[in-house]
Image 1 (cartoon, rainbow, N blue to C red):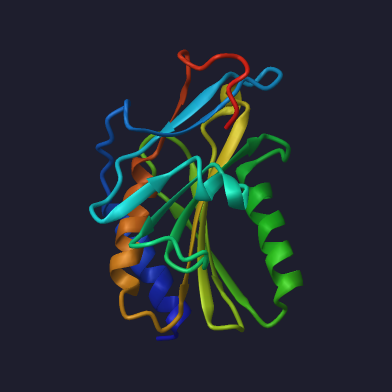
Image 2: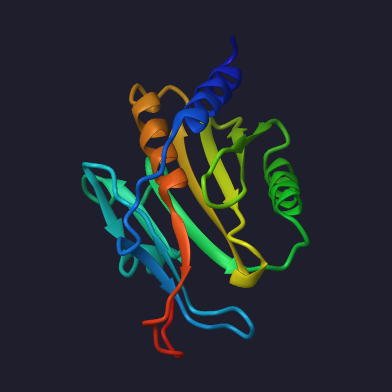
Length: 193
């Protein structure tokens, strides 16, 4: 079995078994009202041993939040990244296709595969990218619904020979299926993400 096939099987299996149990007050990131899109919050429980960051490293690299283990290294490997953006493309499948196209333009020798994630609160679709640089990426796009005005993604990169690969993927999928979008009624209108 190729490493990509193994990765897809492992992630699909975990996605089917995952159960969400996230308290709604475990907010990781917030975003301000933007046009018709209400202010939002993303909540998720953090796996043991991971550090939450929305405002220091995440802001420095231009994302809404990151989860990482140990000290911040600045490398993308082993970092869970949350991105939230205004809805622009028509469907979740369009988001996945656009991202896949960008990836293959950047790395024509890379390989991609997709699978559906069984998130209990919103549709999600995942892509696995196997880079010619021997760095693999898992990217999950989710759609909290038209009323949210946004879409979100979780991503994580890791070396294809990382001995902690399965534990990293398990933690990553726990975070993905436990994440929740909600209107942020406590956020002021000028609150920045």
